Amino acid sequence: MARTKKNKNYLENIPMIKEGLEFSADENGIVTLHVENKGIVKRITQLMLRKPKVSHIHLDENGSFAWLLIDGKRSILDIGEPVKEHFGEAAEPLYPRLVQFFKILEANKFIELK
Image (tube, rainbow, N blue to C red; front, side):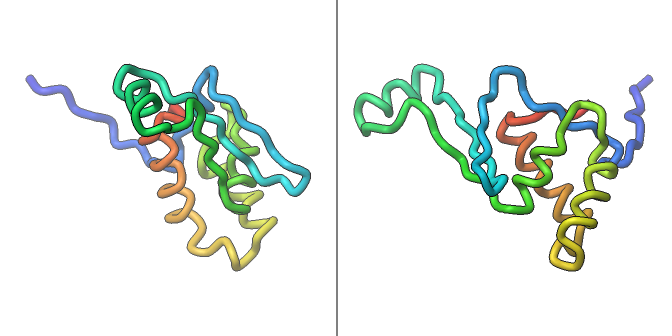
């Protein structure tokens, strides 16, 4: 018999920052992720193409605000409430944008969802 997958609303997922991922926030609250480029292929490109050992990924204002709310306890739905409060109409469409943001973070292995 095939296993059935639970139908869980994506907004109920709880994001957690990947262990070891370094980030910083400037005085304006803009977050920069510092991602070490590891692996043999990346090492070769560093040597041959002079690529950096660490990539610095700058999040925009909305992404930075949401990132700083990740605590391993709040769901994406819970994170949406203060985002809406802070940005108002500028955050709309709120949940489709948040879902896309967290899917990108997950795909790039910056976060895990539980």
